[in-house]
Image (cartoon, rainbow, N blue to C red; front, side, top):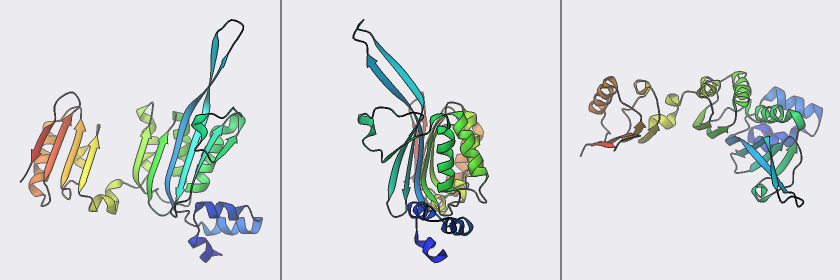
Length: 251
């Protein structure tokens, strides 16, 4: 069974878990790598609109408890699941959804639980993790990542938050991007927003493109020293959000 599980991905593993209690117990003890490549959790606001013929007025009611959960495995299999607190009339935005799950007041907990089932034994590096949700869900997802034996390794992390504090519910439990082979082997890097540049190892990059609000004297000195030490450097672009870009290049 262990050898079989080594060849299976997340979808096959979940199907096997439903066969019998003994097989489920074997899977739980073996902790096979689900080989998830991409995972998205997106919180959406579904709007239901209806017209009142009597007075000619229309009303709109919003349901905030709508979540999209997308997952793709190593072999290209994918599934898009839409979670809602109640069943609604499907619309044109639902064409790509493979499955609908209606959970009532427990929709958030169900999304987090399914994320845990698919991610808790992930050993290989994911290509992308995308999270767009509110603070409560970020906290719960952070708890899932915290419970893992090792940090989750992700090549590309995309987060959309309403409060910058939500970011720290996730980042401490991901493997540092600076430790990944992809960072060490990359030739180009693009950075947008506030970041501590002194923690970045820029020596191996050929082209560097950075967009920021402001630049300190220490940052300039650090960039200068990195450029002088680099044997690959070709172009360095610094763009300020409210000004024209400054371009530095070597020929």
